[in-house]
Amino acid sequence: MTTSLGKKISELRKQRGITQDQLAEEMGVSSQAVSKWENDISCPDIMMLPQLAEYFNVSIDELLRGEKAHEARMVTEVERKDVNKMMVRVLVHDGEGNNVKVNLPVPLIKMGLEIGMQMPDFSGSAALKNIDFEAIMKAIDCGVMGKIVEVEGADGEKVDIFVE
Image (cartoon, rainbow, N blue to C red; front, side, top):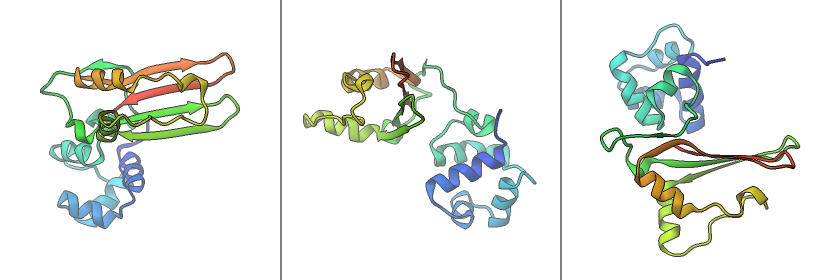
């Protein structure tokens, strides 16, 4: 089931921790316009979609569909986002209903690798013990986006790694 554009804008705004007034100021519209978007009374001008997507660091497709594209894909150099605005998202589902979500900004991973820092041990997850962050960075440099790792353990633990 997909989420409406208005609900997605509201969700992204709240995740970012900003008010409708702050989003309106960023987009150059009134706070009433943002309220109408979020309540599905009206939609942002089509020319504003790239600006909204960039502001929330999502694709236009994600804004419109309300869900993320999960498949890994290669993007051309022209289509690539600024690496300094990208994230590696790690989702761990332990099979008992517990979930761990870790968002790692790509510049932080890059810096950590450059100084030889140990990358995090995600809650003792056996499935994550041997994640090769250097390989992930090489994939990002080559233009890989989307879900790049999906591991399901015998104990029901599931791990997904996304590059966004």
